[in-house]
Amino acid sequence: MDRRDGTEMTVQAETKTNPAMWRNPGNDNAEAEAATASRGPRVPDLNVISGAPAPGAAMEAERGRPLIIRFGKHLRGIFDRLIASSSLVPNDPVLDVRDFAWTAILRDNWQTIRDEAVAVALRGDAAPSLATISPDHRAIAEVNKWRSFFLWGYGYPIPENLARCPQTRDVVERIPGLNSAFFSILAPGTHIPEHRGVTKGLITCHLGLIVPRDGDVRMRVHDRIVRWAEGETLVFDDTYQHEVWNDTQNTRVVLLIQFERPLRQPGKWFADFFMGFVKRSAFVQEARDNIDHWNAAVKQLDV
Figure 1: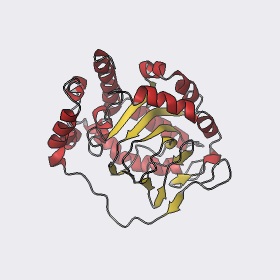
Figure 2: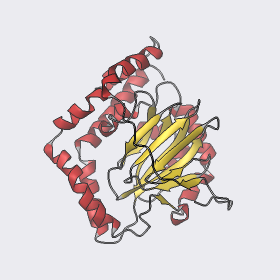
Figure 3: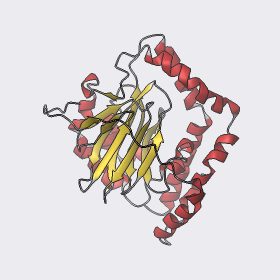
Figure 4: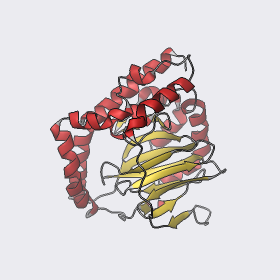
């Protein structure tokens, strides 16, 4: 993948040799208690305030969802194949940023975006664990290890958070087909196990904001290993299995953008239909409610 200055961004072809190590759900309660204790007495249990179940309840929550939601997951393979056949950009795991001219907007404003992330999203408990917000991430997101500060989620703006990051808001609202935007905050020593995205109709872009240099922080997308660079964009198809490591002593921060894949018909019709289904689904609506509850709880703490 090329950088704007003509040098090559670090993207290596590497074959996966070891299977993903999934966390033992039996340890969830101990981890949650340790994480809560480490925050000190000033902060209440925001997981309880938000109404979100503990991460260890992910499998039980999945069984309790409406049949139509679980059935939709089985249908997405068919939809993904139909969408891929209509794609106007390659279906490769890692894509060329030059196919997405608007990514220059992110690179040109990366320091401003980084400064707002530091001032707002990295302050206190402003950014909750992704496991708290998103039901579908509770099986892979360790308590307080992978945090998120949402600006947009599945086509829905988060007005309160956007108001706190006005310059970032102005930049992301210029992105064609914007679906989601949030600061993705990965704690030191974190491994996010192998997982995949919701639909081929969306493509993911990362803008590197804070990338530690005291070790290796990387992501595997299918059979490719990629590494972030501050001020640079990385575009990939998250319907390929991918996993992330932060093998450093510091926090990694990126602005994560999901946007609509450029499509011709009939793929666009299938993508729009499936995304309409997803936006109305229980897991998206629950995530929106959890963000609102979290923001209300944090406001009480004067964060």
